[in-house]
Length: 197
Image 1 (cartoon, rainbow, N blue to C red):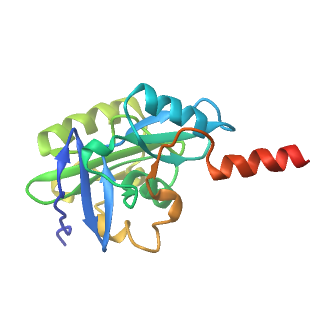
Image 2: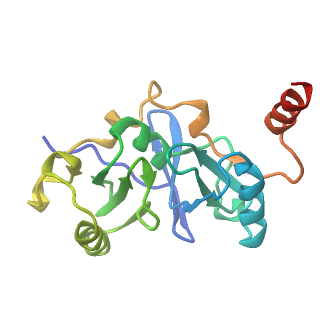
Image 3: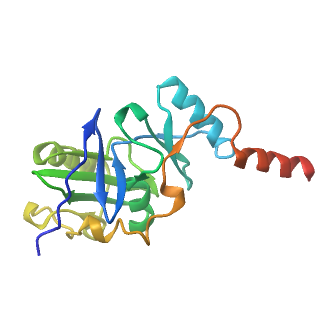
């Protein structure tokens, strides 16, 4: 069966929005490891300030990561990170390519539960194939960790992105949030609890 295809709303500065199952998923975030797992929002704010990025999604795991983007790219904090959802759904380590409309493809890869930088991208078949081959040479994935269009004859299996980016799989933690200066409510509560203890 041919995969269901999805068209991007726009593509500004490498950032695309995929409307799927009534929600909008952002692709093309800049993924950065946040050195402090305790004060990660402080680290995220500093990175955003240094790189002119004002929206982020946080992934907590073995490595705490921030997926950063500028609101100048046309995204809003009501949107979700496609990568953040897919890593939670697909597991720790894998390489995936999904078909979109108009000859475009979405590439994403994860290692040990973290999004691999420069893998959260939409592009032409040539661009995505090239990056896929680079990643495949850098990491060791088994066939059951590879998702690619069947027509590519690359191995692995084909999956439809609309069956993964579902409302059931999409959580509040996958939603983009505005980077604000000063402490967040969660940080105030955390510090307040520590102080009280």
